[in-house]
Length: 359
Ligand code: IPM
Ligand code: MG
Image 1 (cartoon, helix red, strand yellow):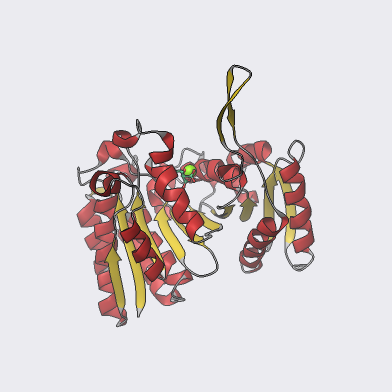
Image 2 (tube, rainbow, N blue to C red):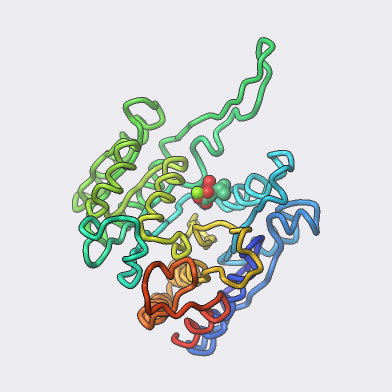
């Protein structure tokens, strides 16, 4: 019996969560497996209904589950709250930290059917697109380093964040990245800012140390500013990228856009036991409730859940293939319609049904 916590959250979250459920129902029937799903409130909706972004009931559901499936959280309604009460700081970051979900995998995949949606020139993108795995450290760095806050000093205010990495934090994320690289092109690019930052000098030393355990994987180090340029100049030079929390946040949005739509990208956040799956896009309040949100990133996050939490590669692949088939048939939500003339524009619910039918 697989135990799943479903946290739809805010904005388009509930709409895409509904389509994830549809896919899970289809998987249950088709593969004859048992999955129990419990739903919880998180983010702005939890603030509205329970006065806190990450209520105790939701923590209990997550404690019970093997995998947590999250829609999206946040929105303009809660942006005026004191920072520490806002959904991102009060729910998303504590959720990642509670279960030490230190390894954030963001597969950046260009679907050949959507190549025309990428802002990159065809000659840079190539005919078959590219496939990069970003491995972002998720529970350390300047996101969580202490001290942190706004302090008074000599009659002035000082905003302070602390960028810090411990050797054990770098070592464990390095191992995840090397293991992934070992099973792919055997090339790992580690991104840091070792020409300026002490935490990056340590990062680089630890990566080199772990590299000795993986002689079959070749390692390249790149400064983050250069990496952000190289991603656009020639994305094909990258296969697996490992980097810290802050650089990974920025580079993954940049890489996401190379694929044409952030609405296609799934993510997995892994720790020692439990794992969290969520689309890379946010709550998209501007299109919430309109029935036009793209559910594919959420559905592909379900696929990652079957792959990484439940070791069901066959199910994961059949979901991913169903997505490819639907795209090949020309179905598009508005965000990925691009310039293609034969696009068959569909809404959230229809896209979810089409994919579920093809599993
Ligand atoms: C992400 C998001 C979050 C982050 C925000 C919402 C706190 O941008 O998952 O990339 O910075 O990690
Ligand atoms: Mg981000």
